[in-house]
Image (tube, rainbow, N blue to C red; front, side, top):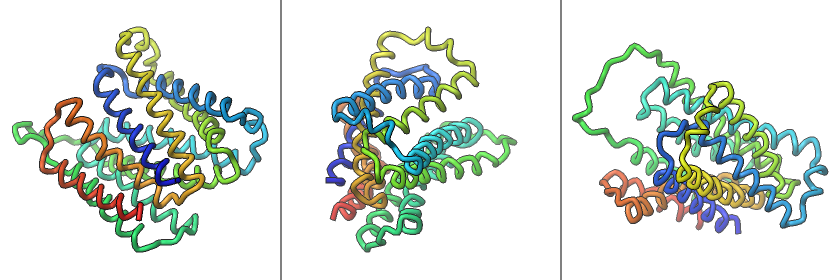
Length: 290
């Protein structure tokens, strides 16, 4: 069941990317994230209401609550370091480091959660890692002039911190979610992320830009937020009953689904890099499912 939920999480995550590509343009990324988080929070509470777990929110033990709050906080920190890194550094170097969080998550699940390091998990993780680096390793158009800058290499350190916090998010969520309903856990985590994301928006003083967002963009923000919500609900339900070392890499299969959807819906061209990378990730996912 955890495999099915992880695949559903990947599917909804891919729809999030497609919806964002179609309708969200010229919007501050942190503001867009903050608005989408509102939708996710509403969805999470709605799921808690449907499943009759509202009272469980107030019965979560301090131990679980502590780790769920930490998980939400590390998610926010991961976003903060990642976006700061790509703001001052080379995206082509930042993104590969950020994607390394998959490998870190698998390693931490072995060390901290004591999950068994089976042959299939190790091989699957390697294939997914190779596929991811192939996808993000493609070179930009040679016609684009490369400018030498004196920007400090500190953005590499920020990117590493982003990847570390992203992997810690999964481990902390697994620990906190063990004795808690997955929908309740998602709701609690989303509250923390909402506070964090809007805190960043107010700090950057981009709140006023919300008035300039068109109705079309708001529609797609809501739709992408709903897709994100479904993805999170499925993902955290999956890690609550399954292994983090298996669920997290399968969730990254959304990269392949996104590529397929972008080819058919957005009419984007499939390059040699995307095809080879997609094949590696697919093979890795199959090994994990086995």
